[in-house]
Image (cartoon, rainbow, N blue to C red; front, side):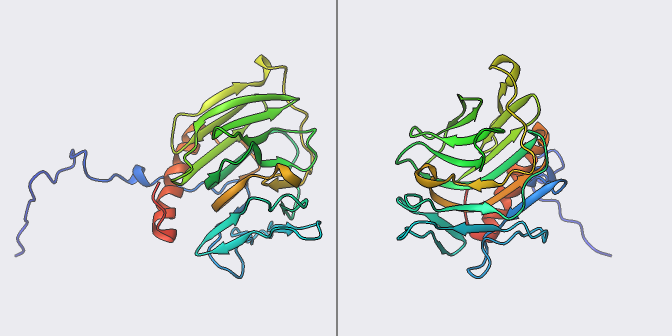
Length: 243
């Protein structure tokens, strides 16, 4: 007959032991695309298998190309100076409801887009200003919606726009919220628009990226929290990135 050994303080109420909820769950419902950026050969490919790859487009004569090494996509200063950008293969569904997730270590040379619709007259865009704070941009309004991102450590940003609000969480923080009705009304709803990572031209954000995902709906606050936890655990095991 076996012997049961009880370790000191190892019990079901020990707050120091990890819980299943600490690791979160990656939300896959209504995911438009996900770039895990694991391999040099296919780092822009859609990991969901749906084919919504990111496509690098360089229209200038001598664009400064992005680089990819050890699971990290680097957009250098000057990469967007020749109208270069990354665009998703397929347009998004109609409506303002959209969620964008980034694992990023930014370079704050200037204020730039993190993501936007190619047609800037629709939807909500996500901008990173030179102070490191996320801004929601819609209907010619620029609204600050996050604490400052770190430039020396990695950040997980979950940016969720619905038909009535936009919410943003950085590194698991409680989402900050902007209500459209209190700020001039909802933006014009996108309908099949192309989405651009990093903006176009000189508007593109620079820095290091290690993961991106886009959803054709707004994630709830609990889903935003779960997504942060899941990406945090994934980043550690897959890329040795500590959040």
